[in-house]
Length: 463
Image 1 (tube, helix red, strand yellow):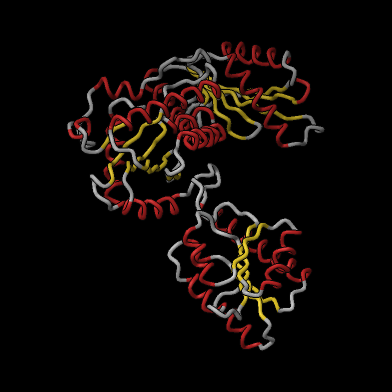
Image 2: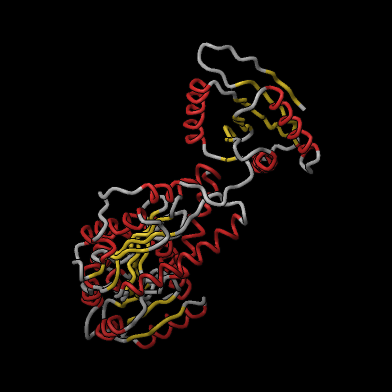
């Protein structure tokens, strides 16, 4: 969404009833590439600002004009109801008195240029004022924008929603990426962040120019779809978003995505469900919860039969719970998961071994790049290549986690020392065939998973 004043252009309006000074200023500024509009009175300026669809970056106003002086003109500009009220102003004056200059600065002028006009001084001061304004606008924009996605941040988008829900017609929508936590747990936070960024770009491409959108949480977004009025329109929008999202995911993961994913949307209609933003958000979020319970990847409008027949507090049946939890398209390779999830799996494995007297082996690989490979990005690249090789070589019942930038831990269920040695030998043989093998040394420690009170024999190796 592009708003008035958000795109900075070098355009200014000059207001002066002295034709000679007006021509001098206009000519000097055009010579340095600044677009100018010349007006002769304060009233012409006010009419122009109220009718124009754009906002100039700077006003250059002569103080001593016959019809309406510069001070009166600035006061009138500051009383306007839109973004024109905040345009920076430079005063022109033949008066050398400090009192006059002080009055101008007190009214909010950013600078003061004395007549007769010196083109060099004029252009330098105007350029300084424009540069300062650009920096202020950029700081203001940075404070409003979510740095990762380029969308509005949580505070800003909620402020906008408070205002827009009071006057516009449309759907307030809460969007959530299904199973997003698994991206971080299985593939790591870098991949999770990449998914967020790519989805944000997708969302921008599917929005209309009058829509407003922002990021309000990790994988949760808020959208006001202006002039959306029917559940059928919401459904078509959701289908389009999911189609593009799944296409995006296929390009990112090819055939390696280990779980189903999609985009779920809950919505409330404005003004049908009211105009109070907090209430509307609650209704949309409640509708989103229904979508999450009934299969994900869809949409629900508050007040629709779909929402009314199933409340968030209702109990789920076994089939629905299984559908939410199950892993579809099971990969033949080892599971790659985040550290927090791995800790829970490891603790569960300890309980399982104690209860059923099973066996498991653990291996810690350390990747030490050669001394000449001092670039941290190259370190990551080498570790990533070794991780890919491990994942491809192990069973789909094996689990792996990156415990540091150069270390990978393996958990091999139902494996004894001999089986673990076979796995390690195969991995090292494959690594020696890799084009990266001469860039790093691989060392490892291995031993059985043991219960408290039992000693474990460990071995250390390198290659």
